[in-house]
Length: 139
Ligand code: ABT
Ligand code: MG
Image (cartoon, rainbow, N blue to C red; front, side, top):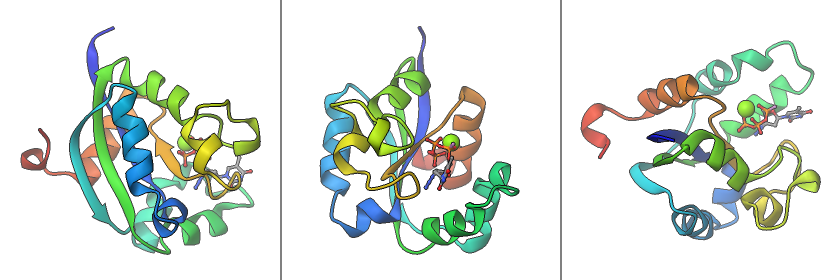
């Protein structure tokens, strides 16, 4: 398992509720190193592009308006086996299926408003990280 990187967002629901600090603590306590970090907001066009894979799904419009409605925290994280281990740490998409000890178990409210994003592949982690951070913002 080589040391590698994943990309995360703390989504608008969790930022609104004041959970930035709690979620970043869980991330660092699980052994991830934060190598890039910012508070930012997705435009509607950004959210449409980010979730283009779900364009034909019935929840797409709601998903796009949710993800663009307020600030998010974007971050790049480094750890051995980062993508898979981070998906384990965040838990199932639907918080009612999320395991004890996961970020979504603690902070997510529904399948739509599920507190955090984690990249689903090394390829997407690189694309998503590069979308938000210039090279000089990554450490
Ligand atoms: P993301 O990290 O947002 O990609 O979530 P995850 O990979 O766990 O889940 P996927 B399957 O990629 O879902 C993307 C977003 O769509 C929302 N969604 C999904 C719904 O609102 N209703 C549904 O029935 C399904 C299947 C959940 C995800 N995110 N947000 N925000
Ligand atoms: Mg996904």
